[in-house]
Length: 130
Image 1 (cartoon, rainbow, N blue to C red):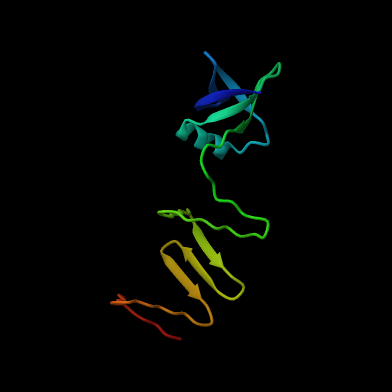
Image 2: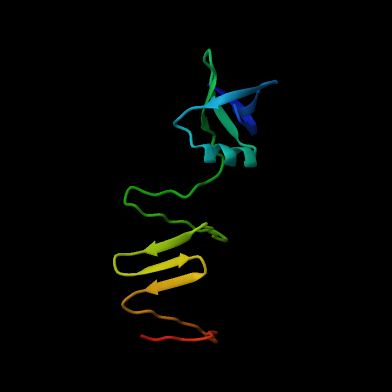
């Protein structure tokens, strides 16, 4: 194994700097191309299998990632959390959900609570209660 730095994505593969040489290498099928794009953005290092035909076999992780533990929980303390979805996003539990689709937001639950210490403001053109 050798370490390399990702320089660019090319039609034939990934351009990397391996020592003083630049090579275009194939990506092993087990490596997610999106992970390689992140490595390119971050200037991260990748693992190259030093065989007769070198191939990128992984990315060296140098910062924390969100993890799912063995009980299926994700616990994280962050300064800011942002999620962008092109078509929609859903947060579900067994009895409730929040769904965002385009410019629509749907909130479903047995009870829906809104709490505010100071002021709660609702702005709407039309409110339709069924």
